[in-house]
Image 1: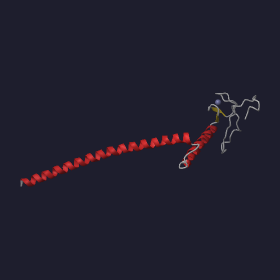
Image 2 (image 1 turned 90 degrees about the vertical axis):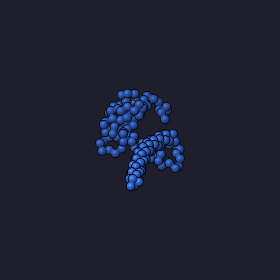
Image 3 (image 1 turned 45 degrees about the vertical axis):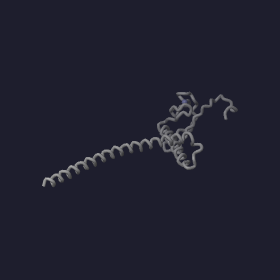
Image 4 (image 1 turned 180 degrees about the vertical axis):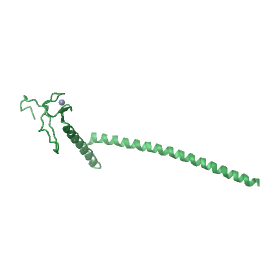
Length: 147
Ligand SMILES: [Zn+2]
């Protein structure tokens, strides 16, 4: 009889061990999964840096395998510049192309660097294309110097 109880006791003890083993594996796997997520995040940000570096250094002659992606990044950047200029124009400003300062649209000179602001008529609110021009060429410079 005591043999049976010993066996039952042994079985419960085995179950107890396998449960604690299992929870140890689960805890370990959870830790490893968290580390995998960290590494994937690290890969993602490094890929992003590699891409930024590539576009900055090789945009003129990209590998044919990724030239469409490089072109897409350049297109997006150009669109951002255009839209930022439109937002500025909606606020009544243009960006000085010499120093980058925001200058009231009606001003003739940049208040920061003094560049002459040569621009088209103020845009109507519903106008599609807004392309303000800034000229730094003083009026007294002979024509043969200007290219
Ligand atoms: Zn300026």
